Image (tube, rainbow, N blue to C red):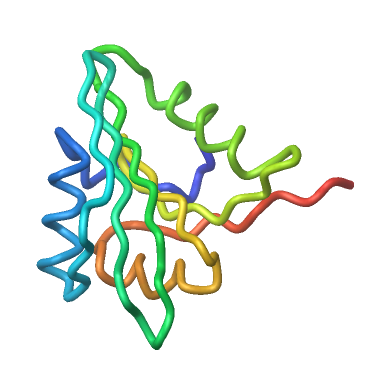
Amino acid sequence: MPSQVPTRPEYASADDVIAAMAKGGVDCKVTLRNENPFGSDATCEVQHRGTTVANEISVLSTTRFSRDEVGDSIASRRSGPYGQTIVAAGNWFVWVRPGVYAYDMAAALPGSVVLEPLTAK
């Protein structure tokens, strides 16, 4: 896990992340939801500054995954051919598309940080 990612807040489900976004002023309409024994995922969209911003949310179960395993999942999205911009904290992360709006989404999720894509060296 990148050292700058806070250990809290942790969420039990993607719906909890969506509720936190709403509390932070971002009303994100769910377009896809998936619950499983390993955690939950959801995709939601918000109209922001004249653009549709898609947020792909992943929450990993703290009983099944260590912090390092959550970090491995985040790293796989930031590197390689993907180069995704991620908002993260605790046991969850959000892929924000387009990535330019990640800081706005992070502002609605107190305690989170933005992780820019990793570039090849």
